Length: 200
Image (spheres, rainbow, N blue to C red):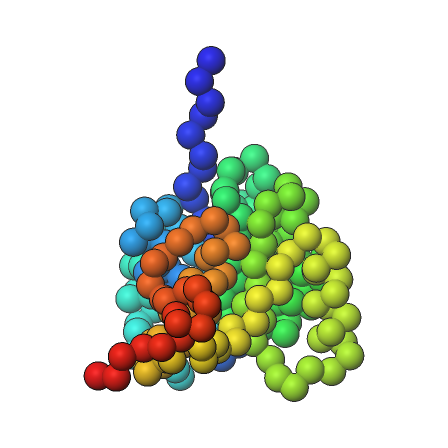
């Protein structure tokens, strides 16, 4: 009896926190890796998109294989029987983090995240907030104890980044590493010599 091939399907959530470019780059990277993407964008996520990018709502949604309205509780991703690799929320807002931490599923986005937790699938949250108060920290602890991974998009400088794209690519690629996906789009640390980049 042969084993079924692994599911190559990922849920992507984009919320209203600053950093829409992270969600955009996640979708672009997953497409390059031939991973099927299922996208849900919150209402606030769409508002932030208009402030931070030149992308229209249609432009953003064209980056995904399947798109759902945030209020579509009958969507496939609302059910644990719909198999996925898991979910990445990029960026993840304070509100979304709080809803996930408390098991509040007021939207499809938080419901899909809750499904990943109950099915023991990988859930990665690119939490975007600073500075942090005790409530933020408690919510990060709560989701971590439930099995999620909080992965703030913190820039790394050992790669000698030259552009904002370099910084974004690094954060997104490290987040996708958590799903066992290698974008091959950033230099990895391999000892002190790996930090030496030739000047242009």
